[in-house]
Image (cartoon, rainbow, N blue to C red; front, side):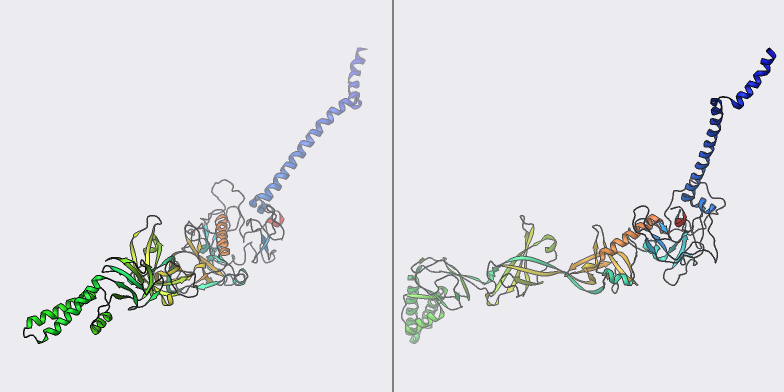
Length: 559
């Protein structure tokens, strides 16, 4: 019985294993499925890693998917890139995967080997005569260059560098930092409205305008005063502003001194007549001297010569004496009336000659330093804007005004017809810093705050930025001290477009490594290191892909 049990146990066990309960079968099948899913996950992970490497590692992509090179290789005629992200290059039109902008077409035809027609030419030669190829540069290390097309250790093509790019980067050419030469093209020049003007050598001056006040010429002001005591019996000029001429009667004055002097003169003349027959020469000379002294006294009292001649002719003493105007002009001051008692030294009338007037204007310190006596000036008034008169600088005051920090300058102008009246405002303009030099329109200059930039038209739609030094400015023109020569053309219209394009091109060139930065010297040409034994280095990050490199964007190449 025990043997049967012993022998039956394995049998039961085998039957149980073969047709045992479902629980035992479930445990054995679960272990196999776990191994299956682990293997499947590993395979999927390796496949995903390979896809990622295929899309992001150019060397791995070239290794797995080499491009045919030869006469039967596929050639792409057009390339497309993003204006905001120039490293995005594809052979199909579409949108930028980063910003969504529409890709723009890149001019040029690809040739076998992944380089453009221009880049396939040897260094130093031009393709079609458009651009001159200088050398090739490593896109990952701009300091490594080659005279012939080459590849780096990653399998990336060297980037061709052209003469205009070197100039645009500031290497070998004295271009402002941060600016590059702009290639626009003849058609785009017309569409953008860019205009050019020739720098010429001519005289230029800086005009200065100042507001002045008309004042009388002090040399033409005359005061009529009394030299004797008396009373005004009659006024022939009886109001202010009246025009008088030289010798015209002004007033009649009664003065006891004038009456006594007339009588003395008549008595002295009578004594001369009586002493004519005297045998004594001294007596005749004495009587003649007394008569001459009395006549001189009348003249010193401002008695007119005509009045004295009439006194000699009639021999009668007049009660009043008529005083005449000493100069011609306008009565600008009147202190007396008929019946007024006057004393010696008292102001009776003021007569001003306004045929010439002064203009007193205030100039700032930086303007006054260039003013010289005798310089020509132009005068224009608000009352008579169409008439311009020429005058000159007559006097420069020696002191500045402490309140306004200005210097007063006196101008002298003729005044025919009394068009300029005292206390009238007038605009005075004079030319300062008159020099001869290279002159360009003022619109050709771009002020940056630190320097002044002008774009020189090199022809064929090429514009070269230059830093210039400006001298005298005036009348819409500017003198160029350095930077532009006579005969060269400068852009005078749409300068802001050229300025923006030049800065953008310089920034992109520096970012992509297509040319050296403006502040760096041009790199020295050297042979690239062999690709068999590359130096140990950290795998580089994805770099911008310049035009002319093999493009893999259309079929999964690294961006």
